Image 1 (cartoon, rainbow, N blue to C red):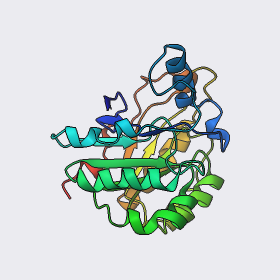
Image 2: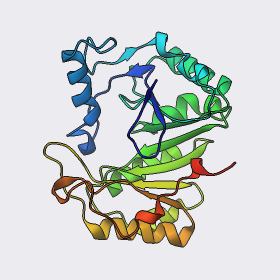
Image 3: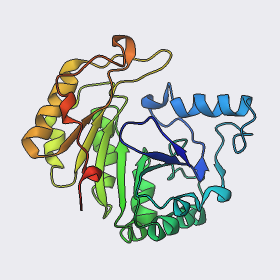
Image 4: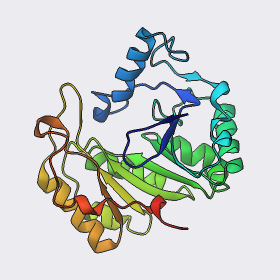
Length: 241
């Protein structure tokens, strides 16, 4: 289980890897690019690149680390992809329950499966946060409807943010969202994110008391450009609960 440069996590854990494009935010998928690089380098577990694969030898990795960590689960795929077997997900959930001193973070573009197949099991994992990725407003509505019906700690990642989000859409779900991440697209061919889009989301988060984390600008504006709300790097899993 590797340490990560992702600003909102300590480590990444990939007992399942691989995915398929499902929406426009997948067009320049970093995980797909990394999987192909790892295959070319001969790294174990990526012999098939970004095809969906189970790695049971990685299952107990969180149990071996005794210092509490924020662990991003499935940074190299989507745990709720239709071809990820139910028993694999259940094995992963069992480890989360046993490693109760860690905080586990899952991001998905497929919350419908999480809702309809795993909601009862997710409810038994108090150290778990589940979030959706929403790159535009239409997908925010589509995915948030399902996330709102999963009994867990919830957050939204607007990354890559490719279009404006109406603040009223976030207001509609104000009781169901604890944290928001905003970030622009990075890597070759990255599409720009507009400052007003970020300001609108930050403003409604301030209004509603939703914790807000600005990750990066991405695109041609550069990853290191300082956003005026940078001091708002605050997430619910950084709190004592």
